[in-house]
Amino acid sequence: MREQNLYKRAEVWWLRATIRGVEYRESLRTGDLKTARKARNARIEQIKACVWRGERKWSWLEAVTEWASHAKDQISPNTAKRYAVSLQLALPTFGKLDIHEIDGKAIADFMLMRRRRGATTATIRRDLTALSRVLEYAEAMGWREGNPTLSKRRILKERRDPISLPRHEDVETMISASSPHFGALIRAAWLTGCRQNELVTAKWSGFNEQAATLEVLGKGNKRRIISLSPAALSHIRMVQHTMGSELIFCREDGQAFLQAASDFTQIRRTVVEQAHKNGQKFVRFRFHDLRHLFAVESLRSGAFSIYGLSKHLGHTSVKTTEIYLEFLSPGEADRVMADTSGNQVRSVA
Image (cartoon, rainbow, N blue to C red):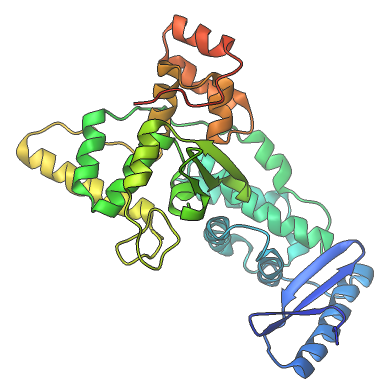
C-alpha cells in the first residue's frame, strides 16, 4: 500500500510533501515504517506551524541544517562541498543568531571578515551565493523576510585573473611527471577544453567513437555533447579501460579522482622544484589554463567560430567566449566573428 507523503530510498524512509506551493523532501533517518509515520506527521505539523503561524524562531544553524536536507538531491556533490565550506566560514558571524536576525549589517560584517582574511572578490561572491540559498529557503519557509545578500552581491564586481596560456613544453613536462592515468586526464583537458570536473566524471557510456562525440556533465548538472577533434578522439581511444570502473579518466584502482586539483598542484610543485634544481625553465600554470589553451588554439586553427566554441565550452553567453579574441590577430578575430557556422570540429592538432 502506498504511504502518503512517504517514499523509500536505499532502505530509508523520506518525507515528500507540498505545503503552500513549496515541496519538501527530507530524510526521516529511519527504515522502520511505524517510526517514519510518526516522524512524518510531526515534521509536517512543524513545517505548517512555521509557514502558517510563525510560532517558532529558527536559529542560523537549524536553518542551515534544514536547507541542507532539503537541497541534498537538488545540487551536485561538488556544489554541495563548496557551499559547505562557505557556510562553515560563516559560523563565527552567524552562529549565535536567529535566522530572522541576519540583516544587511550582519552580511557586511561577514564580508569584512572574509576580506581581512585575504578572500578575493570572486570567493566572497561564492560565499554569498551559499548564504543566499539558505536565506531564500528560510524565507520560503516563513522563518524570515527578505534576502539581504542580493544587494551585496550586486555591488561586488568579480574581477577575473588575467589569462595566461601554458607553453606546450610545460604541459608535456607535467604529463611526463604524472602517473599514466593522471597524465591522460591532463592531455584530455588540453585536447577537449573540458573543465576538470567534466572529465573526472565522464563515462565510457557517453563516448561515441563512431560519431566522435563525448557527453559531459557541466555546470549546474547540465549535460552536453561535445565534438572531438581527431587528436582528442585518438587520445580517448588509447585510454585503457580500468576493470570495474565506468569512468574514462580514473585512478589505477578504478576510483574517481576526488582531489584532482590537489593532485595537480602536488605534481606541479614537484616539477617546479626539479626544474629549479636542474636550472631548467618551467612556467607554472593551472589545470583550468588548459581549457584556455584549447579555446585559443581552436579559434586560431579555424576549428570553431566564436559561436561554435561557446557552445562547445558550455558558456551561457558568447560574451564569455569573446575573452579569447584578445589572443588573436585582427584578421583571425574578424574571421571567427564573421563565421556563424563552425559548430563542428574541423581540425585540431
